[in-house]
Image (cartoon, rainbow, N blue to C red; front, side, top):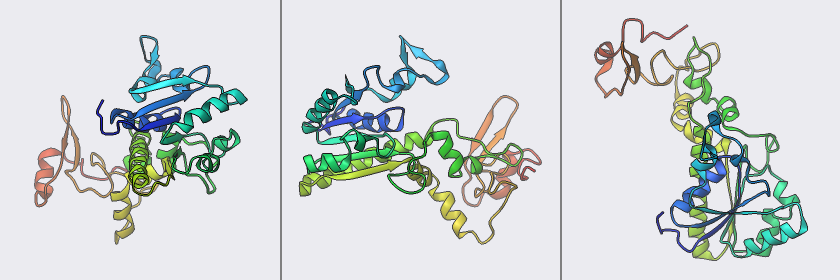
Length: 280
């Protein structure tokens, strides 16, 4: 643990991955992060990817909850809400990732807490932001990869859409959440005023595709497969020229990045005949 955020207290009402991981980043930097869990424990304590556990603990919980303290509170009871508010009174930051409106019903929403403590930073993580037509819909990394195009641009015509092998939207969203909170802290120290910070799967997915989206909106000719833009066979994406990608070998796959000027001569060294053709 580092000490750059020493003295900062964060009260976290987060579950699953994006929210807990974002707050873990602050804990790694020295913040005092207090995770508020239900009486039965946070959801991530009871589910593990691949059903993998270590000493009885979920790997999902282990990967996103270090450098935190935990307290179990029944937020649906009057006594539990009173305890939560006492915690809030000691905090510089409150963070949550319930669906929009849930914290308001508990009396712990942004309007109530900012009126109680104007210097408070209130950070929310969600699927699609606090308002708009998708605000109340459930958000999840795989759904976001499909909905916002990432599965399309990593898939090939022969295979169809393909998700990334890690929860990259959750992970990147966690970093954006932490970045927003740190920026708000700087502002709060300068002005004395708190504010609201929002991060979402939507924001994370679009941010991860910045290069692809800028290329697409500026391309004179937009390549189209049967399901939209797709990667070329053995090439990392629709807007990359070979040999930026992978080539299969007898024993392993080789990953290569092309330098300007290497062109197809270098590509022929990396790919077998036909590999540079678009599948389908």
